[in-house]
Length: 507
Ligand code: SF4
Image (cartoon, rainbow, N blue to C red; front, side, top):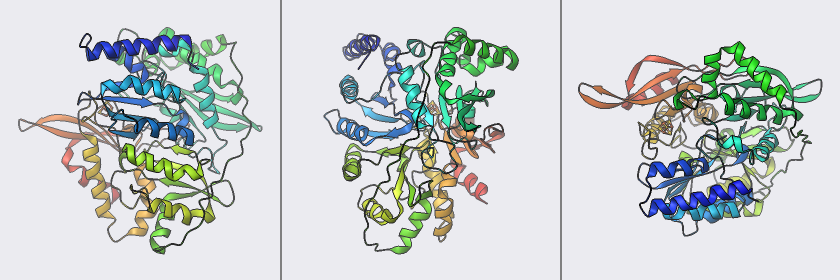
């Protein structure tokens, strides 16, 4: 059910889209209204429409809804899984945009706060539900935050964006230590709670957040969420957008004064809902069994794609999605394949892939055959499309380099390196694709400051010719209490040499 304010926002969006189509307002005017819904114009004039997937958990019902929208008469180009666990619809004609919003809202998908100066999608560790190293499943806490903030109007009128993420242990796979607000699960004396990191972030002047609370009982999570929204609303820099994120406020005040200010806001919040989440029973999906034609390929796939879970007799399975993209027909086909297994919610990962959290181990042959029968290869047999990059300058209006093009060059280098070594490829694929990250400009949407090997695109005049280049950064270690961002090297490389860099790094 939409709140009153949301209906008003939605009607304003409709009016402004109509005015833009009629040529009465500019793209910049439209952006003021559309960005907070996660709707942006692409470089080619068409639009991108971002659907929030809270904590990256895509239920079968949501899959059906997205498939329905993709295959309606909206003429959408493709769907893209993002590094923040959202799903973006790309190459959308402006005439379709409002219809998509209406339909998505009707189908229960979330738009409010997809972009602009609002709080963004809450990310979680993708392994949170199933890993035996996870303290507890943090995804339901992302849902609680989403439900709480949905009608929190100040969260949509902030000086700049606000990013929150939740990790399920100190390995910090949701990068909580480099968010505006990061929560890292822990347990003390049998009580669930979080370490609280504040004022980190990636982009211009990336920085690791400071730990301001050692143990926040999980029941109190919304108190801290309220506090950070109120603090940012009151004190964030509204004059200079480039200095608006919370990390710049911390830099201005110094760590001590910032910590005092944060404590003052936390203490001020007295009226907030307590969160009490009982352990939930997880569904194990049974894909049946099937004959295997190529046992060697099946074993290699199991090595690449499966991970142990805390449930005996069940493994998690990663589906490797080339470039994180699906055409409408491919998404419809995938949805149809999962129809019989509709309890199999899919978890989106920051590496733009999908995970089925619990698959009955004995039914892996059934799943393998289902994947063999699908028009997109999700089995990770090649690195093609699996190196993580932002969407790049072909679509992004402020982008500098066409990063997917260079990600493809990086993938080719990786495939060449593993020719004749399929077992090593299978054993190392997941680690490698989570280690290399490419951003098309200093805004860092490809998350390169958090990479073991990161590339940040720029252009430079070399011998009088404007040339694509990369700054390379290396050595990020993202772990709660000891996070370290990658260090950028002073020298840059011509972007065409990315394959060489990858080879050197592998050796
Ligand atoms: S990193 Fe730069 S090019 Fe890439 S999506 Fe972000 S703003 Fe665009």
